[in-house]
Image 1 (cartoon, rainbow, N blue to C red):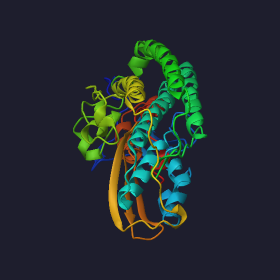
Image 2 (image 1 turned 135 degrees about the vertical axis):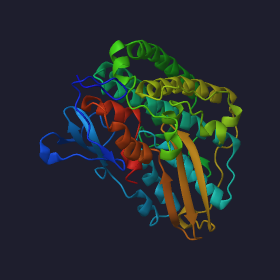
Image 3 (image 1 turned 45 degrees about the vertical axis):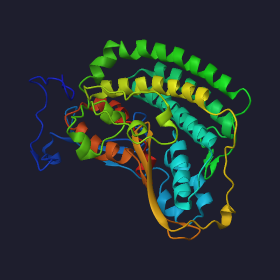
Length: 396
């Protein structure tokens, strides 16, 4: 039996090659090591990304990530489009959670142009972002459990995600790409009776989450396969730029919504959820609790937001809109951690530079390659999903 990472290896476990300057010293021609590819269409990989694995028996000796199998080049494309024409692009940088790209791009344009949005628009934006977090988590936990053979959980949670997409479709007209948050505010107000339909959906999701807790966190097999898997030492957080639940699962209490509040998060009551073990089980537990937290935050927003007032600020003709020269960096807390936009304007009708800081770059490349060494090959998909990454952020 080969011990997984974090477990005690037996005398029969393959002996790993020596490591020199962080690189495994193996010889593929010795017959002891084997190179295999996982992906780019592997169902356990969160997106079209491929892993080049060198194994000794069924234990990973080296892992190299390969991207480039998905749509890409968004940043360069934006330099050749007017600001308003960039919105169909930014959404696609993160397909399961496009609203953060909408918000950060719109907020960057507003800061550079000196635009102040109405109070109700700030609440509606925050509501959309928290709904997006919940929707993304529902998709993720299905992938996490599915990577360990628990496909039923994914059927439950993807169904709940579809109910959330129904709400997005009613609000914006789109299920996946919403393009609801635009410079100046949002595109539309809440439809009549929308809050009641949101509450009904949240109650349905809560019932399913009760079942998820019993089926996952009280499951002996899931605990055996995730505890000790891919443990992130707190000392690695700064070195690797780890953010979000991956950091909070290792006891680092950081959350941009608390540390640097934006929109209306300073008017909401919530705490930073952490765990101390730093393994795949701890990261799963943190994200599960944050799903519960998002439900509570959505309810707070619907209760506290102004019931009337403008939701949009009138703008110049956006097809001939010259943004004053300047630069800015804005960030938000998405499901995977710090999501940021660095934007530069040269005073023309086109962005001079748009650079997206997505957490997937550090989590899926540098961190994944480190944590994979010593891991059992059967746990590779589960480890990858536990880091919660979206490859388009890397290929942007």
